[in-house]
Amino acid sequence: MTKSTVVSRTAEPLSEAKAKEGVPFRQMLDTFEKQVPITEGLVITTLPRGSLQIVQPAKLPESLVKDYAREFHLEDRLTWQAILTDKAVTANELWPNGEGRYAREFLGTRGLRYAAAAPVDAPVLDGYPGAIHLYRTEAQGPFTRADLQKLTEFAKQLDQANEKIRASRPKNGSCLVDTALTSRPKIRQFLFDGSLRELYGRGEFENLDPRLKEEMLHTARQELHRLNGELALADRAKLPDSRGDLWTFRIVVYRSYPAVGEGPFVVFCIQPSCADWFTVRPSDFQADAEIARLIPALKFMKTEFRRGPTLGEIAKTAHLSPFHFHRRFTELLGLTPKHYLLECQIQDAKAQLLARKKVLAQIAADCGFAHQSHFTSRFKQATGLTPTKWRRIAIETRSKDAA
Image (cartoon, rainbow, N blue to C red; front, top):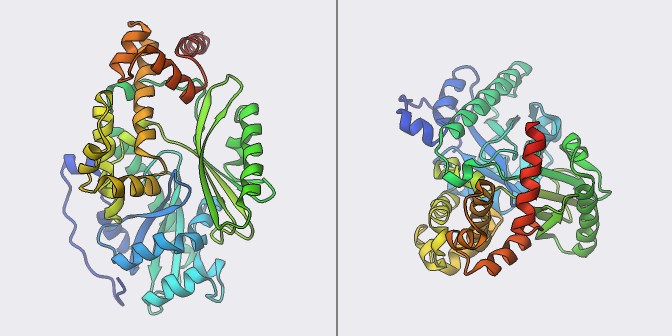
């Protein structure tokens, strides 16, 4: 990866089809390098599993991607400071003498001396922020204020490109229907320290439903107590709001999280809907082939959920054994294949309930449930409400909003 001079990369215009498939990050970086010389640039995102991930560009050294995923995401204060302060930062500001492990081991051992990062709103999924990193060698010198201003503008351009491409991607029919009883916040991730102070998205947290906030804080206390010496714990929880509607979270508790600061931290991730996942493409994870190979399984499950595909069938889309697929899918995406299939069923059922064209028994059959009572049971388990009550509240809510 390390090079003492900027390597010229030939950038060819993308076809319209390829442009819709993924952001041409490498081409954008080529153009940017004409203004700000660098050794390498990459994009890192937060994910609903409660950690950080390198996603761009393609063809990074395998050791860099693996080392980051294995341990250095826990040390990546550069990304989190860019997100928390909402501005460009440099590694020298965070580690003035290069003492941090991220600066000393992750960068230093690769011949890199200087680093800068700027926040990116949603590198892969709406509501999950990240950052763009730039690296330089000793010979290239530190980043200047002018460089940081240009980096900030580049990050904005990347946001615009991501937003445009995601909007251009086709959506599954049932995913076109907004079925949320309560609008989900723009920010989908909340970060608490050991004293339960919300560190990111504080305004969004304050505007959440009062009962949901109480449930989140109560659960955070329980999870911190349950940590009991473990390095980290992850759990999936459904928490009710004042209407009884259940919000699905992945909750990760870190005993120590140097990327943010000292002491324990709790991360609450609002789980993406199947509509959110359906728009993700392998090209969104160009830097990590292992995650990229799992993405087609999401589309396969969204298309085939009504007939109940087996784990073996789903695993074949990723060319993995069922056991390995299930383990890695859960670890890397933060939910099990079973949870995703149920989410597809529930989303489709909600869309049909709102359409008011079918009786419950027919909706149950169309969505792949064994029978109506099975449908009612799983629907209530997933949403906190029976199908009939959910439809009544949803229709009343929409009527009030339209008035």
